[in-house]
Image (cartoon, rainbow, N blue to C red; front, top):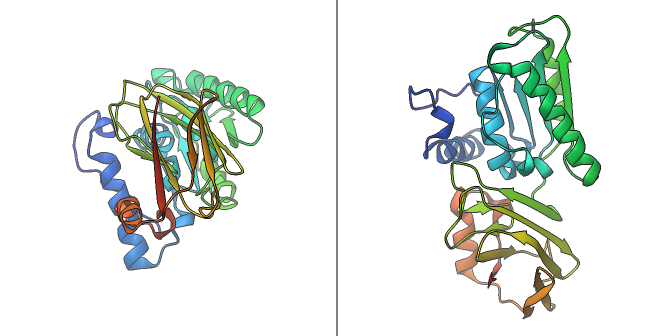
Length: 263
């Protein structure tokens, strides 16, 4: 199913409006329900102003998509950190100099390569600057589609890098933020067997959502925050945990138990 979305506002900052992420969540949910779309094979792409949107939406909604393709856009202030588990491709005309789009694409190429070097299991990316092309690439950017098609959504990654943007997110993969969220907060969490390690977080409170695809909920679980033990014990599967985690209408995003810890 190909959906060319008509976003609600007619404003220059359409990707920065508070309702936009919820709008795309609902679009995904509706097509899963009414068109039998696979939740694990939802892809995001956009051109020009739509490319701006991919730069914005992909890092903060990475857990909804299998891969994303940005064509001829500009990221403005957003960060690539949230793309750790979302394959991301950039296509840009070599001569597309308006707003320094071409130079910015080169910068993101370097940023993504550096992130992938430091974290080899994450930040899959493909960046192509199309020689001789300006803002219109004569459809050469279509090669993004077969590249994206090779990927399915990573639902339960072993490492999560959650970077807040100007639109605040309360949920990202198997993490949730129940309390106050500082501006541009960064949270980095990994899982090793039955141990959850909060390696870095600007949050004071963090919820960890659990299901048996992640850990054995019948065995003891340990949570470390900056190497300090903040939880050790067993968890209880509850209907409430399932109900709360189904807020997006995604059965594969249902979690059976929850641990909330404070720093």
